[in-house]
Image (cartoon, rainbow, N blue to C red; front, side, top):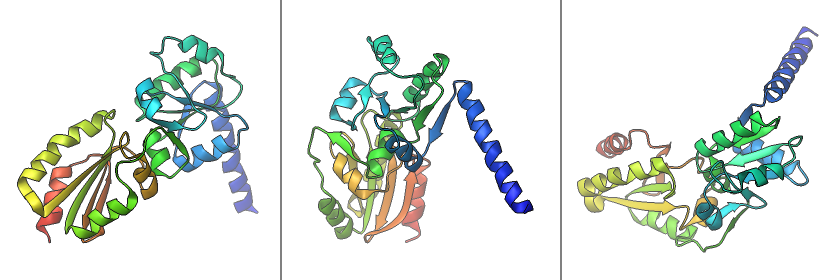
Length: 237
């Protein structure tokens, strides 16, 4: 009985904290499964892609509208939203989503959810999305490269991702250091979205995966100390 009361009390506390947070106009970051579940629970979900129009045109969550704080018609878009219903926001990382969510909170929107990992998490988790292009790289081609080379380093990201750009000089350094011993594949969302979706293991950009004889040695969600990690992994084999 005490255990039951404790569980009930904890549930009640979480519930009232959630209500209090949203009543103050704050947003909540959700992982993919929780975000997706809440979206699917709405008949006409209010989904906002807070990226730029060029990014949105290439790929986006089906049913999303595209605007952010820098959009010329921002006020028009906000007025079209229902502040009494949940709003779901994503971008490529958290920056633009966070700014938009904060402004909606100030305007009285009480339920604002941000997708942790943004579009990378959505597509990388295999959820349905719109794309206006065909992937340059297919999953069978990807698997063939991984299986036919002893060491393969895969860089998965986007040209619109700031952190992803810092990976490029590191990859060039690794190419110079290891030559043919290390095969490096660079996969960008703007070129091969379907293979990212088919992998179903991408949560953020960049994602780095090192294979040896077709098996994963390590998978990094984010850059970290990539050069040292690769050197350490290859030196021990």
